Image 1 (tube, rainbow, N blue to C red):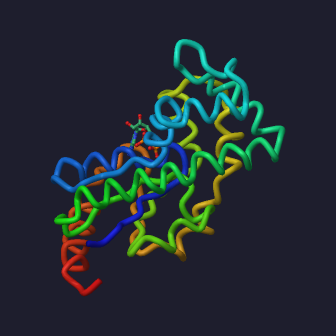
Image 2: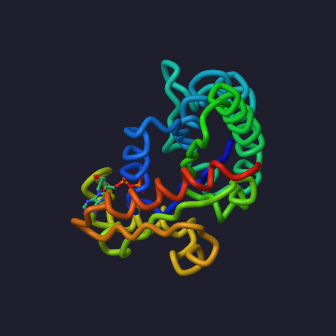
Length: 197
Ligand code: ADP
């Protein structure tokens, strides 16, 4: 079974691309969503012990407060990552085991190249879009200010840095019809998944 990474900057269209493949019946893993889920379930007690129970209210993590803490405190970020990363890795392993009969699965990770996670993928799909299109989409989707979006983008590499590392590049400017590009990638992934592991 092959593991296909799917990455791209915020607002590039990763979730949109993932949904396309999910509709084709391919098992799809959303690493960021799973991390959020784990923070509300198995990791909750550890996070409370490490950072204080006040970060949760009625079992819901105050993500803004946590983000503010780790943004200004590198040690706190290290501690949080030390809790979240192994938990997501185990969760992903369980997902892979549960889908071991599938020819390939897709793992969506926003910062894949930035963290070196691409080395454990067999191939990587990168979704690109012009920065202004991405900012406009995120403002529409999440609200907030332009500077909030830019701050989130500042943790991610520019497309130019990622393109040489990707096996497939999906170009997704505004109002683009993705299906011709994604059909081609699907055909190639099916071929690739038949090669030896
Ligand atoms: P990501 O997961 O990379 O942050 P999404 O797939 O959630 O990006 O896309 C961000 C927003 O932009 C969503 O609301 C989505 O519906 C919209 N969107 C995606 N692709 C396009 C496109 N080609 N033209 C216009 N809007 C788009």
